[in-house]
Length: 472
Ligand code: SAH
Ligand code: SF4
Ligand code: F3S
Image (cartoon, rainbow, N blue to C red; front, side):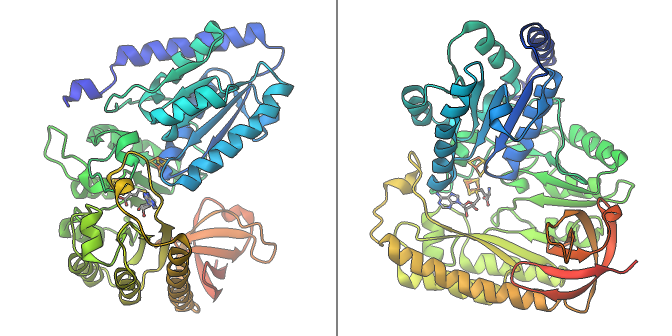
């Protein structure tokens, strides 16, 4: 893929900006109230970041926002396709929107995101969800104004699920929703084709943003007072491979961590096959990079890892963890794991269990394998019954919960630097905060601290969180 084919031209983006103004005028002329939009986001941080751009575009068109779909002139579901359960939730929500549309026939309902990039989903929506007006995949995100205008003018349904490899659109409007936290995509797409995973099919090939654009974004976020900046990519360690300049993710991180200001950098996700010693050394060198590594291992069995096309063995994963802990003894390690991949036997599952016991992750995201149509693993024989997979899953969770509780208990009595990021909803510990390692802390303190780095004394803990009080 040539870079010119990937980067959306300034002329094309200028045309979208014109359309946003045309829609704004159209709405002023045709509605008797200020337009309202409801944006519902499913899935990973990448989708959250995309929704912030959708909201940015909607705001340019004159929309304000509501969480109530009954009140909205435009409802957007930004969807995730990673597991069947995620898709079922979306179909459930879509079904419920027949009522809001009945009450307000002029309401426009849009389905976008990763589900919408799949042909079979578009076909199903076309046939069975006739109240949906607009369907577009992640590749068409930057053309949202043009697509919405089509819906307004053509009085028919619009489906845009081109099979391009994806694009990079710089300078899209944005509404940031994360308080003192901001997301910055550094790359899009994935080339890894893990055999269970739908992401490469719906997000297209890997493409990196120009370093200068990323640095400029991060600088302006720091200037605006954002305290935590998370760099996003399905596999951040692939950053730069497609760029003309020689720059890898560690170089990018190093440059960003040298910027002036009081901020913390995070990133996700790191693929173990590409997480280099250089990356870990860079993290170790900079205080402004969070001492947290999310390093999904997926399985503790080398045979299953091979069947997953992960590109590393159990031993290589363990060696990487050892290196990370050697250069950063205080590193917080989190991971993802899949239970019940096709061909996983009880013995193979026990290797996963033993890896979890050996590494002792601070937190673990556990998933039962979900076949995704179109992926190679979906065609493999999968003889283990669901009930047995559930038992394995429960056993794994039990081990992890004990680990998390023990890890958290070790914080009690310590003093931690935390970013206070909002209210907890619990009257005893009204504030919610995160340590540099990303551990959740519920705090006693007043709301004036929200959005600031503070020090907190940890007084209690459980499996899921730490509890404490501000010390200043
Ligand atoms: N790019 C990231 C993760 C993307 S999806 C990475 O490579 O780590 C997030 C997690 O969902 C994955 O790490 C995996 O554990 C899980 N996952 C992906 N596809 C799945 C499937 N078909 N069934 C169950 N879990 C899945
Ligand atoms: Fe999916 Fe693997 Fe790519 Fe992650 S690295 S998005 S799990 S294909
Ligand atoms: Fe889901 Fe798409 Fe993210 S499939 S996990 S929203 S990249």
